[in-house]
Length: 143
Image 1 (spheres, rainbow, N blue to C red):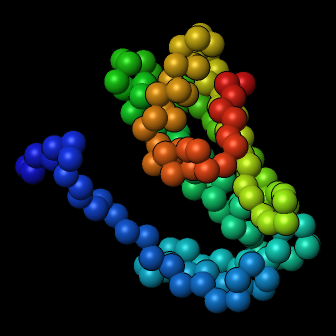
Image 2: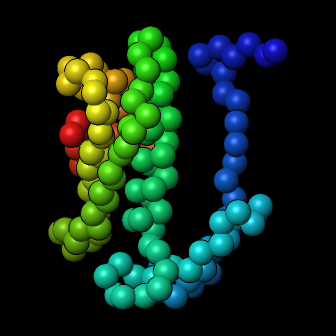
């Protein structure tokens, strides 16, 4: 088994997609064929999804995985009905577009202080949270 030091980097996975048509009547497909979706502009009533929904889904899934790591390190079992409601806003501000987000984390049955500490730890573990840190406004709420 390879030992990885904190200064080394090892690519664990590369997601590869091909997109045509952008957010208006576009299509995105993954190289492995597992993702094949239509895209549409948010709020336009199209039949496809949009980049903000995809980002919310990916981030919330990753964050739940990070919660699992944080819980394991703290020797806590996550509730079976752990859930994350992610909200990603597309905002027009100062002549351009920005994102804003909220992750509403439900950890039923856990003490609120413990739940908040797990959310805080997951924020430091999750690569999506690291990517947006300082770049967009984010709220992490224990609900």
